[in-house]
Image 1 (cartoon, rainbow, N blue to C red):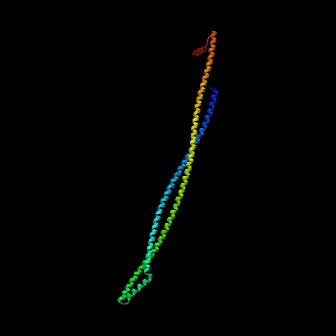
Image 2 (cartoon, rainbow, N blue to C red):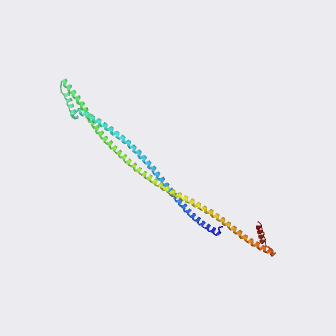
Image 3 (cartoon, rainbow, N blue to C red):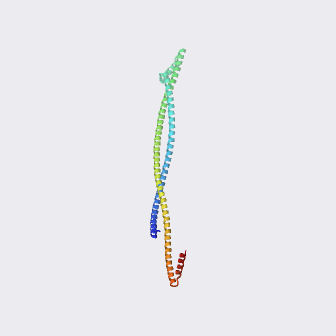
Length: 291
């Protein structure tokens, strides 16, 4: 049987180990707290990045919507330019057709009409001559109308040309704005990709911290199990110590009673009077021998 000194030494060592485990557990709990704080901080950063991406998506949607409107406006401008160019071609055709009908200018025709009208009013002429003049005045009047139409068409041509140039400049400005928005969208998308890369990096760091936290948790569990094992072992040793002390005490008591019983027998032989303790010890020893 293990002696008391061995048990006490083992208990002392176990208590020292238990103290070390308590200190280690305290450090592990502090480390666990730090790891949780780090993970919470990473979760906050990840949440902020997702919020930023949400805002970026909103910006992209707004930019795309603006771009769609500009593209629609660009189509409308292109159609306006096409319509104006078509109208310009019609006017050019009209000018060419009218130009083929006369090679005189407006002032020349007007002057000839005035001369013929003056001649008609101031000169006595035959019926045939008058009819010829009237016919010529009618031809010149039609010619003058063509000249006026041509002039009007040329003025309209100039105005349409101005409008086309104006619409082309407006269309170019819209194209420039579309290109600018496209560049802005690309830059925003790049920023979004950077945010996503940052999220991936934060998630990797979070996973690493989580793994470290799990390792700390597992170590804490191991320490708690070891502490429980030590407590149970100390209880066992204390019980064994109590048993040893009890046996030792019984042995000492038995020795004392044996001495008392032996002394009592010697007194009986000498026919001397026994004390109560000697008598009681003699009776117990006899009973034990009978058993």
